[in-house]
Length: 193
Image (tube, rainbow, N blue to C red):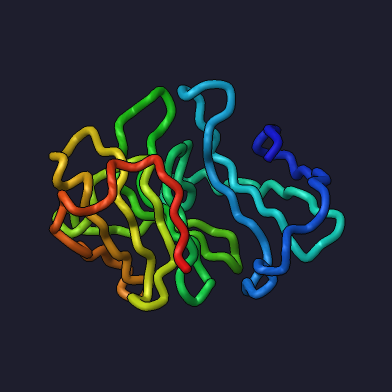
């Protein structure tokens, strides 16, 4: 999405609508949060929505609620996926501005109100902070699957573990402890079929 001041609402044409595989989504829109622009040291705490059913397609920036408990802040390299019921987006991990280390926060975005909530989780039952990981909607487990990513604060075994976020209980569960047989450290693309 284009860069603008946080208080602006911006509409931008982006061309033709994507193929029909996105038409089954409840809200039929693309939701994007965070990222960086000029350098790795300046992240943007911005929420953008692209309604896919409207023509022409236009990016819309959602004004922030700047209270710390209702807005994640300036994240980049976080992972995100929708809950199986399509009502919330779960976001985990990433880094903050100025190259700070990975964090282990879990956030949910209510897709009806477009309001964020930080989900409190017990440190011993939460994945270590990471970036370059992948989150995927996982209907068979009723939540979100997280594949490993880069974590400079933990052992190689911990970095390679996969986790499942239970969307109803709002808790994380370790999927497997077979760390050496799992995928690498992160930075990959993933999709569930």
